[in-house]
Image (tube, rainbow, N blue to C red; front, side, top):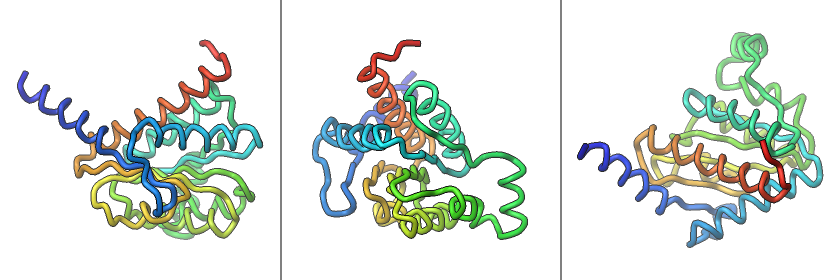
Length: 194
């Protein structure tokens, strides 16, 4: 029982310390203001009918797949999955694992689309390569990272969400929670019920 409370206490503490940055120049000191910034960014992309891509590795890929479905079905957004087995294994085999996201995005991304890059460590080369493609295409980027505060991905987005923790379970849970909160807020705004 004591360990359970410690885990929840740690999760809660890390959620309260989560940083939401506009680029790397302005940090939202209040969680609610950071969430409002994220919400506004997603709604902007919904209104202009941008295409929305979520990417991540391991547990973060599960979050990416889950959010691809939720932002489409519940959020009414134009989401696209990069997790088709044939495409992923083709890109990995032909170009190398570090290009499994960037190569398809070279074909699919358009100016003003939105890439949501989820990486607990913030140092995965395939995520970094994908963000570089997004920038070259003048797409927008939101990053979700954790672990070290100087991780590479945290420095690359238009909005950067950083969880100050080095435990995968805590970082991934907070990433999932924030994204779920955003899609639920979009549903509420739009009067969507399921």
